[in-house]
Length: 103
Length: 171
Image 1 (cartoon, rainbow over the protein chains, first blue to last red):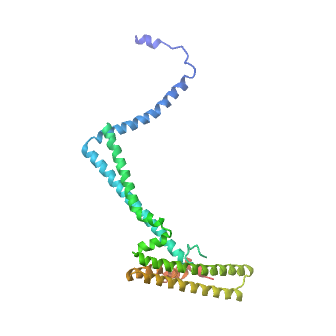
Image 2 (cartoon, helix red, strand yellow):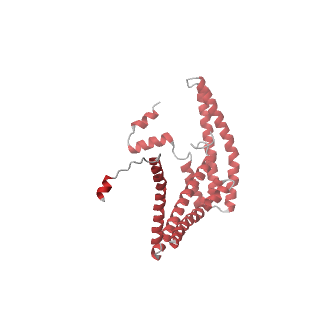
């Protein structure tokens, strides 16, 4: 059987555009691989989060991060506004202030 | 799987909600101030803990000061324009230029005097401790602290000579 298979030769030519078709099929498959990776990641994360302790820790951590980031951003924004208003007050009174709109 | 996805989403939504809540709560006071017709004065009220009566006195003083200040500003602008014109016509320090420089210095002195008077009047409308704090703060922010060249000279005297800076003052 093996001897017969070794002797067997395919003489039929490949159909036109065969290689192009192969590459097209490969490129169509690639995005799906990415999607599969995401789906796999979500599946694993979902499975891990089914444990009550992990789920509680995850939600708590995100809450704490949200609170801290919100407070910090608010603090930065407030001090920036304060500095702007301080400068505006001084500029409105002092014509010799470097940033004054006066001469 | 569905429950896990729900927890994943819940965490993200709660985190985002906490961020928004704390951000908007934290900036509420500043946003209210910015909505005022004169936000810089509303800031003054908040910063120096002024009551409504004290604040209305500050407002009156401020409104009385600004037109006079604008007049002086016009004068300064006119003097600056004249000086530029004279300096553009001649490369020498003519008696006319000297006279204008003197006049400009007088205007500046008058302006600073009026400004200082205003600051003192405003500080008097405040509770004593806040008034002192206000005066100390405006001193830092305005002409009352040493500026520019004299500050650099002072720094040089303290920290040794800096030739690169000195070269700026050779006339």
